[in-house]
Image 1 (tube, rainbow, N blue to C red):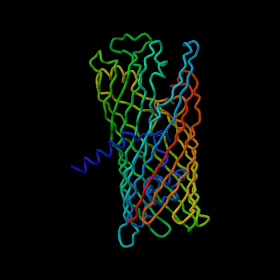
Image 2 (cartoon, rainbow, N blue to C red; image 1 turned 90 degrees about the horizontal axis):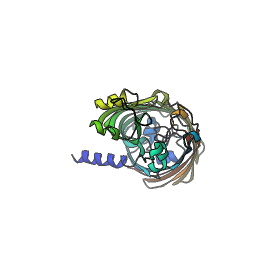
Image 3 (cartoon, rainbow, N blue to C red; image 1 turned 30 degrees about the vertical axis):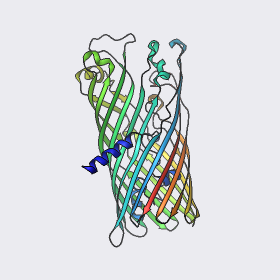
Length: 435
């Protein structure tokens, strides 16, 4: 009972703050050292974060090893829109709330057998999330003449418990695999326009405006596989694959427009998937103190984020929302490929410095981009370092994601026209201990 209670408290702490904004629904950089090297880590994968980047790298850990790291993501987003003169010419100039999104992570490994060719481990970390929160008063122009300040907020996050096993086939070749047990949480608040299908009497603008909110959670299973090939002492090549993972959410939704029908609240069900992910990386050691890395990482968003369909259980909701097609959120996300570069230089036997760069394209097209699920193209610069003393390693890393403006035209079929922008600062600290 004590173990279950401890795990529940840990999950609550993680999800109270661990929702971030980058790389579609996935976090950009897992692990403090990997973050400092721009996430170009598939061909290196020689520390505790190997379970995420390339499970085969776990075989390089030749003694029992535990690590803990914390990452704080600090986004700064803005949104501007001027309505056409024919619609009154109102202006929106909104700034996303400056929240801190903090995720604690834990990983542990142990070699098995006298030859120490096999290593097993367990990781508990936050690999994915998306979210934003806005001041409804700054978006009141969306409500027309009423000027109602609705709440706008989203949080989607995943907590992953991942047992891993890796085997060193020979001095040059290692393989690894990990099971991904995803526990996801999803919260959202936004205005909803719902046609009154029961009375067949639409509101003043043909729609009924209301505050919508929901909260839900779910479970999903996937796997990761990796290989690591070291043909020489100065060259290492890695390949890593994560399977598509679907989380089946169940939760409760509320809509103020349905109070008149005694249906203010309903249960719902929804599937949300994380895509197939394939990455290849190279690590080159041209001199004893220097390591240079490069990765190409592909996410197949087109297979998972075409649309998000919600099944509302209450018959009133079914008639007013499901049958009108308002339960479908069209996404039409596109596949995305990230290019990453990193470097590490040992300035002393116990001190290492790191730097990196990566390009992260937005998967959402202009037509479906919105402020609830922000999708921005970023160029990111990173740096970090480590200090080792005895069996302890202290790591730090920072990255700054410079977002590109998204200018979306005011045309039919575009969900949220205007100028979308976001920059993100992320800081990470970690500690590892070899037994």
